Image 1 (cartoon, rainbow, N blue to C red):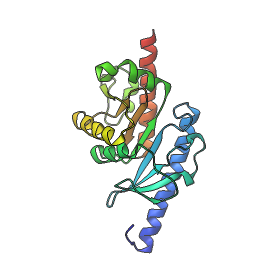
Image 2 (tube, helix red, strand yellow):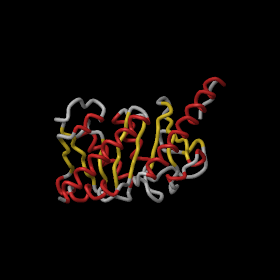
Image 3 (spheres, one colour):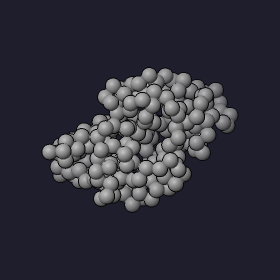
Image 4 (spheres, helix red, strand yellow):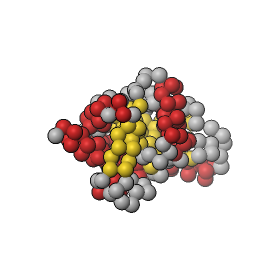
Length: 216
């Protein structure tokens, strides 16, 4: 990392400390709600843009018992510059979202309903959700008449290839608030961690409502 004046270093440290604490809180809450069981899910927050720095969960950690020692700081290439461990295997996806959506926080969950819906609607390439009052919780949406299109992408362990698919998808659907990986889970984002958390809550509600309706 480049040298900064002491006050700049103090500010950067404070941003990281605050983001790490908030990410840990979100991890524990999402675990309680059944959205990131086991070691599933990953979260990140932008600390600064120039040069790009992100706080991100380490790979393979239990989100229900997250501590700040399991939050890493990475650069725009995904290299760890603070902390011990490897960043999430899906770091490349976070970097694409940060770049294309101007997002400052990305949250990825592995809920039952996102897994079911992502499989049930995969043949359509996405799921359209409309008419629900809860849609108004998404940034920029002011009416329940909004139709939200969530693209569904085939899952892959080749995250370089998957990140390129995400890039193509987000360029085709720049106004979407998230996407689903088939039989995997939900990605969403926001202008900060609070906004991204709200989007998870809204989209998880809508996915469950869609799934329960489908079951009927």
